[in-house]
Amino acid sequence: MRKMEWAGRPNHIGGIPRRIVFMAVGAFAKAVASLFNSTSVQNADTLIRLVRSRPPGIPLITVSNHMSTLDDPVMWGFKGFPSMDAKLARWVLAAEDICFKNALLSYFFRLGKCIPITRGAGIYQEHMNEALERLSDGAWLHTFPEGKVSQEDSPIRRLKWGTASLIVRAPVTPIVLPIVHHGLEEVMPENFFVGRRPPFPLWNKKIKIVVGEPIEFDLPKLRQEAVSTSRNLSFPRVGWPSTSPCGLDEAAQRCLFTAVSEQIWAVMERLRDSLKHS
Image 1: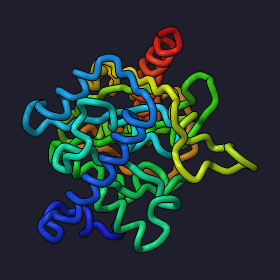
Image 2: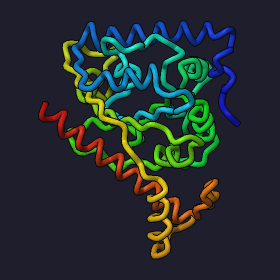
Image 3: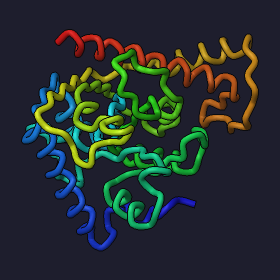
């Protein structure tokens, strides 16, 4: 069963609650990113162009590292980005145990175009199907493929398979745009005082964002390589269904999702390295 899905529909009460939420949250993001802190963005035009005017019916997946609980929405608060436009706004995968732990929060985050994901429930949980439906509509979906916040100044962690599975399973292959940022871990540090976050965002910090170029995936070739590789490997099976229309078995799917994830990781790590030296 999909949690409070009706509140996330664009025609819910004429779309008025959704517009109110995005105007308020968008204004908050603008204030934190551009008023109380300074934000610089490399290659912002690519992101703005793909959000505003990509080909009709073509979905967009943006992927980024996860530095703080404020990454979304504050990373969209830089100057020139339409952060208060509910129609252009991203859908985002959000942790069910944090954002959907009661009815009020569930309603708010549903209005904010959030899709609840149960961490540890796997890539074939019901709400992943909802994400696929949004992609089939040609929507923009943002994911944090690391799966949780990490504020260490260290390489991007191994990516979870969820994002890769959406790319592979989407009815229309999405544009995949990598983004890496730094500085939001100082705006909302996890361990500010006795192991707790500050009660409000900190100020006078420098936020840096670098937007990459769309990642090209040769999915037919990757599928063939996954089938070939999986013949020589043994995995404990968890009962995944075969993918359609390719009909890959579970072992081949694991190899394919690993290959796609590793390609995304490599691009994100190069962006992280360039950001460190900028």
